[in-house]
Image 1 (cartoon, rainbow over the protein chains, first blue to last red):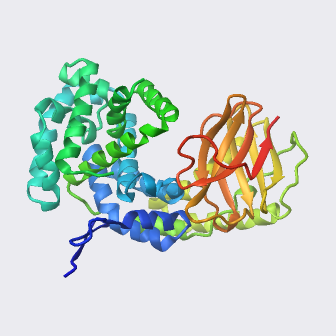
Image 2 (image 1 turned 90 degrees about the horizontal axis):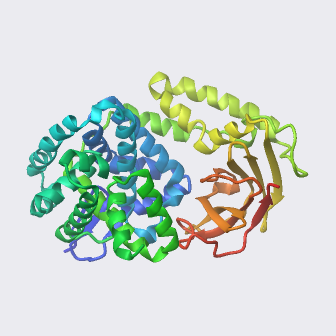
Image 3 (image 1 turned 45 degrees about the horizontal axis):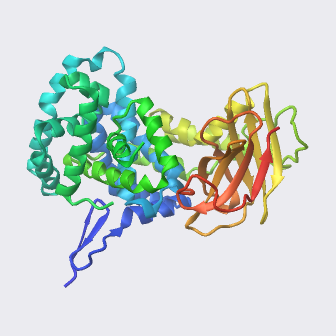
Amino acid sequence: MLVDMVIDGFDVSEEESEPVDHVGDLLLRVADGDRAAFAELYDTLSSRVFGLILRILVDRSQSEEVLQEVFLELWQSASRFAPNRGQGRTWVLTIAHRRAVDRVRASQASSDRDVRAGFRDLGVAFDSVAEEVALRDDATRVTKALAVLPEVQREAVVLAYYGGYSQSEIAALTGSPLGTVKTRMRDGLTRLRMEMGVTS
Amino acid sequence: MNEQDFAELSAGHALHALSPDDERRYSAALAAHPEWQRIADRDAATAAALADGVAAEAPPSSLRDALLAQISAPPSEPESMVQPPARTSDPVRRASRGRRRSWFALAASIVLVVAIGVSGLIVAQQLGRSPAQTTLAQIQEQSDAKSATADVAGGGTATAHWSDSLGKAVLVTDGLPAIATDRVFELWFVRDGGPEPAGVFTAASGDATAALTGAMHAGDTIAVTVEQAGGSPSGKPTTDPIVAIPTA
């Protein structure tokens, strides 16, 4: 029996080891100006993308603006997607993350992102991620992988990915040398890849 | 830089946490070592998987409506959004239909704004005029704006618009030859040090407006090659240019 599930446009077949890159196929069609494919792409990923942007930006109206920017960029730049270099879903989420981080840095360039705010975020960052994901099966892979990381590595990855903090900000927040933060981030990401079984 | 140094930059890049200086080192290293791309791709996939750690949240349906309305609007005609430049450095053949089309472009943009109302204004500003068209308009506002048209091997024409003072260039194509769906057109600034990649584009029905990424240097030649999707992985052209337009 062949059972297919579609998770965020990622077709997972129980019998086939090679997943179909549904989002990647849509992106190739969008690159040709296919509007129906664009609508399908939006329906497939907008909730996931919006959730991510909202997590980083917190502010809802700014998050809506960034969501628009992201999908405009997808419409206009889909031809830059290279299927031989990774999944379509990765490409979309990378753009979304970059846009959200750019926005948070631009809008909070001043005193908002001072060390105190950072420490507050540090306290809630992992806890809130762990809390949110505890209830959802599709996220347990992430929680489990993060939980396995040594605390300093988890801190570096969580502050960067979910908080939008740069390496130098993280160094200031945690009182660690910049070089140490860079190494922790590298080691943390490698460990996560193994724990989550990510293949690019 | 060795592979281990690059791997450290790659992790920071995947998490969008590098300083601007490190970001430049990362790009330079990747350009010099295309074989390290797999490290970058793997890190991007790992970072993207972290998105599953956040609850999905449905955006307001008005956003979907605004986006779809925008991309369904008739595309405005790029070469007619602005008047042709007063003078050019090269003999130029201008598209004769430019002026006639401008009225359609104007009418279309008015309809667009009315249709989507205030809430969609951000979208209107960005989608009604693509970034390339915005850049084109910006170039045309410069006193040193120039343009030149050349025939494209295989059919069609390409018009380069540039401003040396702005350091930007836009290519507008008309009737480009069809290419395979897994190929793209790649733009290049050709200068003394060799060709610099300046972005890729596709051209539905042969017409496109594409802004060259990166800074243009005075005297650059603007060229287009046909490359694999995503652009030449080595950062150097793998085919002969189908068109090359000198700007000096």
